[in-house]
Length: 149
Figure 1 (spheres, rainbow, N blue to C red):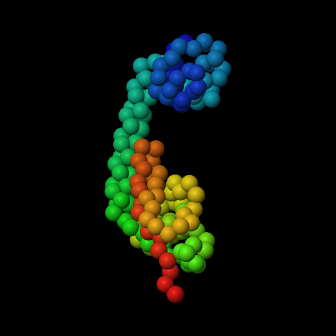
Figure 2: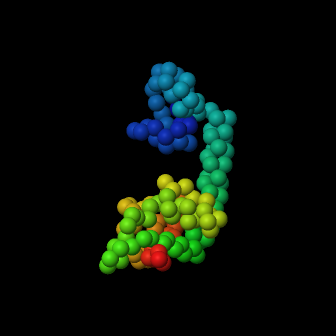
Figure 3: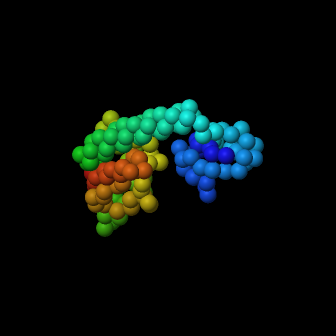
């Protein structure tokens, strides 16, 4: 039986593909679980329309994320840290701290998408990656300076 897949299935195909499977597999598992529909002209047109809508939505999403990446590239954050002898920092600058500093700049970013491998523990200038989308990564410049006494 020919079916059109509604979701990605490992070893069978991607969503929107038309595949040939055994009748029992389609009738008893794929169709009742909502993973596929029978490949008739009506269902093929319906799946094609859904695929086009999903592609358009994905393009809009990427465009939005690219504009956010351009905005983030212009931002320079300054983190003040307490330092001791030889400019050694007490504590560290974490992704939560960076998210808070971005909030002060009126940019709302979830701390979990800030791709900081480990907290910043030294003074200096850092380019911190922010994973906005699977295809879009922005970099925020974070300058860690000593706090004035």
